[in-house]
Image 1 (cartoon, rainbow, N blue to C red):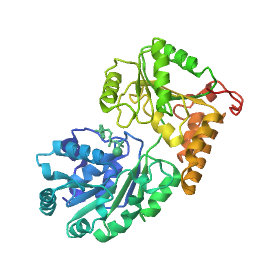
Image 2: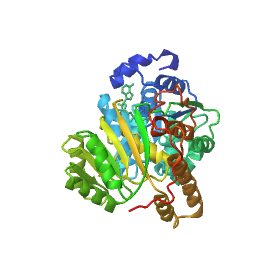
Image 3: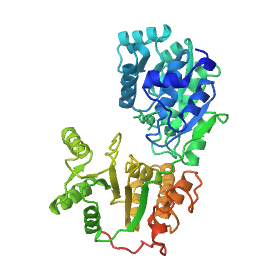
Image 4: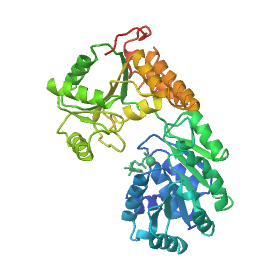
Length: 421
Ligand code: ADP
Ligand code: MG
């Protein structure tokens, strides 16, 4: 189909069953269909997949989608297949395929059946695949989780650095689409530079979560009773408590249980069955609280999480934003409470000390931003959004009074001398 002939709303309804585009989706889709290099920055849950899936389904040829996680690719391929009568409409190309399977994939691509081909970045370096893809019609290359290209991102993957080189081999002027939920200007710069797409049309959604209330409390030896009091004030509500270590997770979960709060632990040290059980108990509201390491939350989509507590401050503001972002998905109340002590910062610094120097330097710089956020007396929302390169009007902006500093102005917190357990 020619790009000018595509009725986007009809395609949206036909393939996805949605009546309306979300946020910037329509503009992004138009940009991709017109063949522009395009860069999309949207928070998690913003609907980035559809931005490239819809154009891929509507345009001639096959879109190549680079994604870092095999499980994620499989999910997407299953979802696309369920929208179509042809299972060949989407394929994953990875090292686990048999010769016969690879031939089927190639056949479906050559015949024009396959609209989306998901590949892991390391598979794309295989000469056999590159040679094959050079001979077929490619609509565009989409690079999901594009922050993996940057050392300043939270998930740097060296294989992503080769992508530009490989894309150039696939043909002249294949449009490139980068997508990420990492909003810091440094990471964005890295992505545009590494993908050699300074000409890209950039679409950046706001990262402001106006319904979330941000609060930082100084962490003292009474932190546990403070948390218990907080939870009792939010009786019957769902919440997540993040801790740095598995040991702390177990400890806090137990303290809560002893105090009559229904809570379960969640961390990577528990076996898969227990983890699944605890996650389900939380989703089904058999328990109110999950005490967890960061292993919890990938793909958790409980809309009515009413509070996210950080017993330990995380290692970057990106992590903090991601983790607190699990509160108030339904637009309702979401209280984000972080406990802060400089001792915890020193602990995090110590974790980094074994790493390569370049990594350490980045780690320290990210940590200093966490310190500045915790100790600031200005609008926390303004601080966070500024960190993500976004202006915020702290007087009239949406959610302007939704943080402790604005509600109860106070002098600067100096947590250096606090006692911590
Ligand atoms: P992201 O990759 O940005 O984190 P996803 O692409 O996974 O987000 O989409 C998040 C959710 O939003 C999915 O459940 C998806 O079905 C839904 N979604 C996307 N676009 C729309 C739309 N136009 N209308 C309604 N729901 C949508
Ligand atoms: Mg996504």
